[in-house]
Image (cartoon, rainbow, N blue to C red; front, side):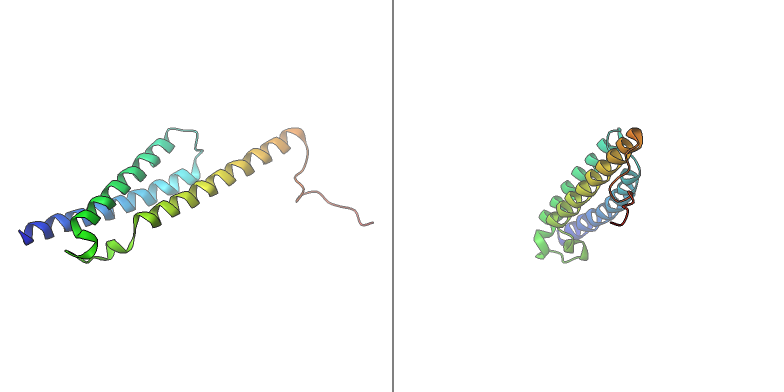
Length: 119
């Protein structure tokens, strides 16, 4: 019984590492592309799958009672926090791009680019 639990936990840890790598790769792709495209749905799906695997890992390991692994150091709360930070950054980047595109179209320079004459 213990061997089966260890094998299942090792397999889940392997899947978790694989998903972390995919999430990181997907994160880099999302930062490069606009959030309006279909790639954003792939990113959201990978986040949901990652959360599912983390909850499954925590249940199988009983939060470190059955098996203590470094994978348990990365919690659902940390992942959620990082994703929220990335969404805020993406939103800020999109706002900056829109402002830049609007100012380029109207010919108005952003305040940081305007030169002020000394009084």
